[in-house]
Image (cartoon, rainbow, N blue to C red; front, top):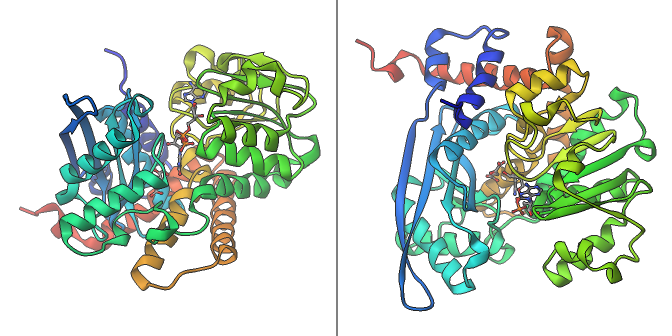
Length: 427
Ligand SMILES: NC(=O)C1=CN([C@@H]2O[C@H](COP(=O)(O)OP(=O)(O)OC[C@H]3O[C@@H](n4cnc5c(N)ncnc54)[C@H](O)[C@@H]3O)[C@@H](O)[C@H]2O)C=CC1
Ligand SMILES: O=C(O)CCC(=O)C(=O)O
């Protein structure tokens, strides 16, 4: 039988345990989710028919605080994926010291096939189905793949209707008009940018001499492309699910973003030569993008993109994982043998949940921060945690991924021990 995504995710835990002083009890607690929910969501379609969608929410672990994690709308969503994403959220929140545990949710649907009204009914139906499972002190959803501010707005409105009071802190990534935070939409990209900027001097690299290829041009892929190109890095390739473009001289990222925003289609960028006064470029496939000879490769799409099958073809020097789980454990081993350093998702993409935390704090205090305050606090946290993890990796002579897990596991273990044995329903 082939290994599930969760089996693969669990290997990260096993790798880290060897380097942490942690009790058997604590390890046992972390091996399985606290609670998993699967729901059927009936949605009235525009043509009058009824369609039932499958939805999921997994609260993996709440030892450090209410569980936190996004909601994904994608045809491939299933319990194994959601459980793995919730596992990663647990370690991510601990790695950057947020007072949250980990969760994740999703609906098996292709949202591009739905009308706006159908999408709203599905979003509200999902919240209706998981309402007893969530809340500002229990579990706090947010955006992920193919969900956004508008969807979070419908969801928080639905939850508030169910509770018969306004509950802004129950969901983050909301529109500003509903209590959202400035800076949340770009936070994942900006957090990753701070990680890269912190590490660049340690890797003896300079921006202008650093070439970058980015897989995925959605919320986070486009944001990191924009930030890096504006800072002077040479972004030579970008792609989305249909394919990508490459030029060794560096792409004009702002033009690509504005073209994509105006046509709502990235594909048009590489399909219509008329728009490509951008610069001469070559059309490439996603597989080709992964194999480019660049300094930095940034997977910013979905999990399992670099695996045993293609790891030996990777020529990038460094991989910064903005997507969750883009590199499998088997690929990690091959990349390590090739001298390619991987900077892990639970650190690199933690900017999003960090600003979600800031949003939750603002909602609970009723006092709202400026963009400067948000970005300064985000920078402080990302830089400090990056350097801590770098130091662990150096001291213990382990990979950055294992170091990030060691860092997170130490904090989780402290929370488990602090709770005492009552949590285990002693004999
Ligand atoms: N949105 C957020 O705040 C956070 C997102 N992430 C992770 O970042 C990744 C991307 O998320 P978002 O940008 O929010 O999603 P999104 O839905 O906005 O964008 C996803 C992008 O990936 C592309 N894509 C899908 N399959 C692909 C493939 N096989 N090859 C190349 N491109 C492909 C899509 O066309 C789209 O451009 C996911 O792994 C997500 O879990 C992580 C932390 C926070
Ligand atoms: O902002 C959040 O709460 C969660 C973001 C998320 O789903 C992730 O980091 O993968």
